[in-house]
Figure 1 (cartoon, one colour):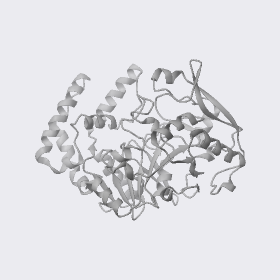
Figure 2: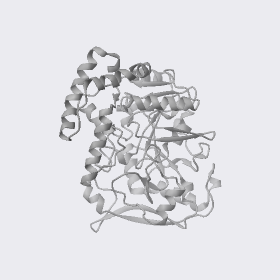
Figure 3: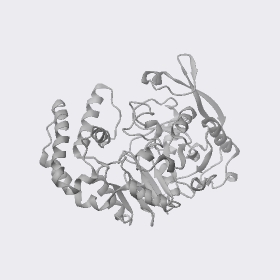
Length: 432
């Protein structure tokens, strides 16, 4: 028995929600360790869809403990709204099944406003990043700048005022430079005190809780958000998110030692998508790209933004396998490829006439690379709902085997529809 870390191996939207839900039935504790409410998971359970942004996927299953770790930035209003929305669907969330790290950073209204003002300014200059405008980046900046308001601060009103003064000194200087009105001390204090009684019951010393659970032999599932190619260090910078999204962050973002992480499962879509700005070497602007987008329902869970679609990029996923230490992958949305006459897989790139086997870190070079493809025969039979290898067409199996070989990691699970049970299990990550 081992713990499991789930990460996206591409630019996010790989189908982590279904896989995490599938695994959470086997887990005792499910932990979010980075990101914020810019992450979106859609779970389909017994025909009912649950859309989660901040809460760990385990909250919809009875008897599971859900944990928001210190690596997450928490918008208290978004958290309360999500809890209330799930209550309306019959899912009761209490301190018995949800714990929030007391040292997690809070997202305030001034973070959301700054995010929007910066993105508007960047749009006017043609250099926008494509953020979700939810204040994620500015909140992480305050965390690193050591001026953040944290969950635990809501319980100490005697010192909260001084911390609000400190954060406002920084933000109001920026707002004056942007020509925006300043934020008042009273407004932020009211914002914080109005949510304190609803947030504080969930606070927990998470590192200590997880250590106790580990010693008891509990199965712990670490749920990543976004994708490895959006990592602040290892992604396509600057078109990235504001946190580390690779598997190593599961340790830092939860307080659990890296030696206890266990199996690293990389969720990998059978083709490639990206939402927002940034390089995308295999992007398709033709009828195939439109086919993938429509059949795959490629719209963001949180933002509703249309995703860009393209062929599977094995060179990029191979990079993610290395930077995450991926043990095995869960290959999702294979069924979306049904009906195509041929399929292409990117195996490397040409850059200024030279062949290279990885995407360079330089932004200008990323824009110049040309994909090198291998072409495989497609299949006409449906793979929707397949639950064993024998249900798959021979060419679909060949495609999966080619992916495994090119990325240097085996397929542990294969998903063939949004339904959780439409999954071919090769290796149970908890038992590996």
